[in-house]
Image (cartoon, rainbow, N blue to C red; front, side):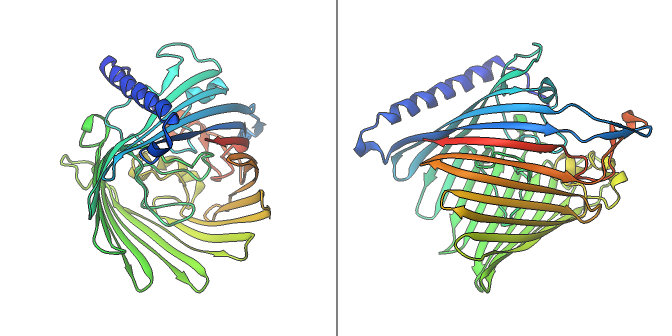
Length: 435
């Protein structure tokens, strides 16, 4: 995604808000005990060290290996929660990230295999502070992100939330078909805080377990082809959580249904979404068929140490033939609908085993049933001390390696021969401290 041009007025306004939030954060640390319920601050520091081993590709019968890529990302997040009254609260969060990485990762920050950052912000300052626009990129970059700045007004029956906030739904464990505003890819390392988007949201309680959730989400400069609207209803019926959602996003229409309940001792979910492209466009565009996505599965806690789940995902926007994967990226599902998996059928299996009270092992396997490639992700995490965690893991792909395209201008630089055989292997460590 191309960085927005630096606008002096926008930059000045954003800087004022950032400094205001930082000042309030510092002041909150000095709050007296009787003030703690009104003003609280916290945050975390995270370090991710990553090695990317790019897959070899074939060119005229010769196997060509690309050099590995390395990256170190240090992220500091400051959070502020201010509640001057029972009915009013302010939520603020600001990130600063210092990255040391291969220059090629700066040039291709929005990787083919990671979802680009959500563009549902009506205005935003330049994310990269250093190097500046037009300056040469070497191996160091400094980034920032005003990720939360929202005001919540609570009444007896409804909550009104205005500003930059997190908006997400879906009961599926790996792939959420109804989550199109700010979703995560399965291999994103930091999924703790969903990226904030600019929205006006009204949540109305209709009963003990019933809720109506509606809102407007602003795209860049409030353009009609960038905005989104949503209406979601949730109820509890026959021991089942049922929710239906309607989302108008970037002139497309999504109709979604989410069902979750217990079956015996297991949990069951079914999350579906049907998207009608260009439903709200007034000008004539080439007709594009709608697409359907669904995730269904079961999870079970076997004992105090072991948890597991299995999930099947169907993606009608994908292809069964890997040679057709390159033609998908211009379609609505991949351009606007936050779809990134390229096949049609997937089997996802995950588990967590508590080796000791402080040491856990997590595993995830995603199998593309269309081309029989797969990715395996083991992660080992150790709780060093209270609020301090150390982890190490990997995302390892198996499948046919790609080949160099004979005509890169029309089909892209590489030809797929499997999906996960084209992903780079990723090895990582993480260190997290919460305060």
